[in-house]
Image 1 (cartoon, rainbow, N blue to C red):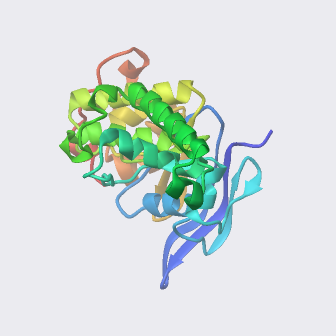
Image 2 (image 1 turned 30 degrees about the horizontal axis):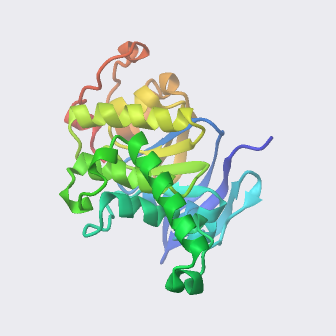
Length: 275
C-alpha cells in the first residue's frame, strides 16, 4: 500500500532562484509529520505546490499513488487535501458557523439554478451542511460561539476556526502552516490536543511549525529542510541529536528527555524559535 503522500524529486524555481531542490519524502496515513527549517527554507513554497497554488518546476506529488502535480487547488481539495494559512484568512464579517459552512462547498451538489429557486433538495442539503459544520465547531471547542462574527474571536480561536473550516472539506491530509504562531502557552497546549485528536479521528497531518516543543511533542516523524533541500528525516528522538539539524536550525543541542511524559507545553528559548 503506497504512502498517503509522496513527494519525489521536487524542484521549484523562481526566476533563477531555486526555492526547492530535489526534495523527496513520504507521509504515512495516520501520522503527524512535521516540516521544519530556517526562514526561507522553502516550507510554505512546498505547501503551495501540494495544494496546487504553485506548479513544480519538475518532480512529482502523489496522493495515494495518484499524481496530483499540476491540478488546480479546488481539484486537489476535492481529492482530499486541505490547508490552513500562515496568517489567518477568515471571512471576518461572516459568523463562525458560516465560515465553516463555506468549507463544505467542495462537497456540495446543488447547482446555481437550485440555489436561486431555493428548491427542496437545495434546502435539505443546506441543513445537512449546517449540521456538519456544527460538528466540526464542536470538535474545535467553538460551537458556543457559532453566531459570533469571526473577527470577534481571539487569535487562538480564529486559528481553530480555520482548522474547522479545513476539516469541513473532509480531507484525508490536513496541512497546517504555523498554527501556533502568536499563541500563548495555554493556547498552544490546547492546539496540540486538537491536532492529536484530528489524527486520532483518521486525518493525517503535515505540519509546518517553529515551536519546537510542540513539534517534538506531537510528531511521529520530522523532515528538516534547509535552502530547499532535505537534510534530515527521522523520528523526534533522532532529530534532536542530528548535528546537521543543530547546525542549520536548532543552534545547539536541546534536552527533550522529559517529553516522553505528558506535560504542559513550555515555551522554548527564543533561539529555538528563530526562522
